[in-house]
Image 1 (tube, rainbow, N blue to C red):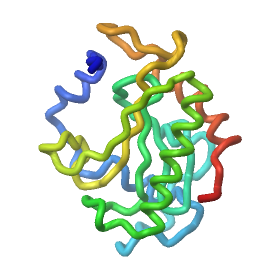
Image 2: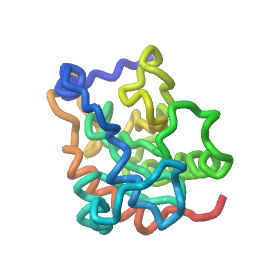
Image 3: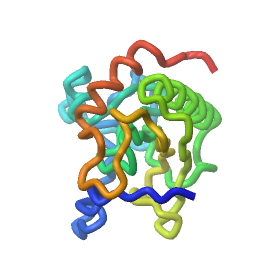
Length: 187
């Protein structure tokens, strides 16, 4: 098995000041296509950020689904490392609705297809870490990771490099048009 070396993740790993608020909850909870997404009370409309390309770029959101969204990892294992996240704040897979489970699976499939086309990657890690002992960095809000392993040279990370091959903002700039043009809405 190949080792993934990610010295750039040390900023995240070494951070002892974990945020009390969930990094996936507002503003993301309001960014869906208007679906009723949570059994919790939503914040007032004044708290809702503007939805649009600028907000997506700022938060690295590649795609908005009905019950989930696709976002680049701010501290990626490799360039193009993304996550599929339900809008609802749920810690366990069995808490998801059938619609949420289906959309997570569909968006993982579509994300893999897009990453294959954009980066040339043919091998991926995909997974969900449930709980801190399993490696979950955001323990209370379930999310699925998709990590490309063998991207073309212009996307690929160099073992031991101090930064990923592409800065996250550049990876977003390159991937966003693919997601905008190519996410299949069928199951």
